Amino acid sequence: MAPRLGVASLLVVLSLTGCQASSEDGLTVGSVRSYVAMGDSFVSGPGILPHDPDGGACLRSDRDYPSLLAKELRVAEFTDVSCGGATTDHLIGPAQTASGLLPAQLDALSADTTLVTVGIGGNDGNFYEGLFNSCVFPAYRTDSGCTYFAETQSESILATTKTKVTRALQAIQEAAPRAKVVLVGYLRIVPDSGACESMTMGAEQIAEAASVTRDVDRMQRDAARDAGMTYISLRALSAGHDACAGDAAWVNGLTSTATDGIYLHPRSAGMRAAAAHLADRLTSR
Image (cartoon, rainbow, N blue to C red; front, side, top):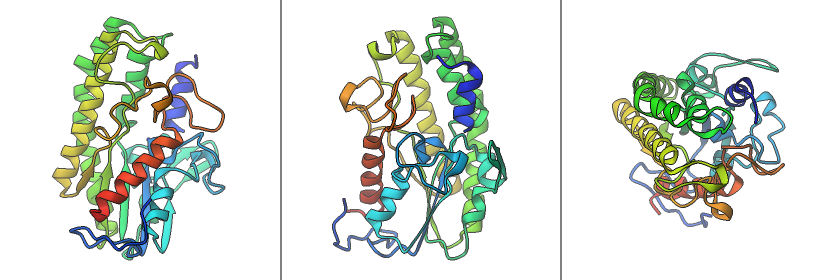
């Protein structure tokens, strides 16, 4: 099992046809002139090969859900600046990586941007790192530690994160005033209940982990509402496809293959499902 520093670095390193279905926002297949994707590793898809040759230290996949969505919507211009380990601070400010200083993701936006998708919040306050160390990784977790994180620490972290996500969304809208800005949620990591043999997690640990991931979904929904923007949750979509679902999993558990995502992160099947769901929602097919 990777040491805590390794976990932190990974987190610091989230088919349409040709018919012109339209949404209430006027989006149609082929109508999006400029699409910018922003966010963290659950967006960028580290470990899903092939990697974007321009992804650098972000380990961005050429088959993350924004890339697939851009093809389904047949956008004219697509820019993906999602990066493993991004926080809300990295949306609006530069990020230091092993390859040097990355510009703020916000810098990819302009007055001509038509669509922006953002997946962010899990790395703020080291939330997912705290969850994984307290409830998931066998080397660190304890029942008491998991309960303490879920029932004491997570609430304060998410309260602060909600404010930061709301402000980041507002900054994005200011930088791209004509764009439809969509906050996208996270794929499920654990089921709502029951033990998880593949991750050796007991029913109590699963219940606590599921509770806080529901809280993340609620936090993102509230942040989007406060910013006056759209939130598209992936929680209901990914029910039955968590890391404990075996061959049906859209997210890796404690192990992964060499080409299909890193551990505790999306697999290619999850990216395909997310892209199809977003295309359906955005065009109201």
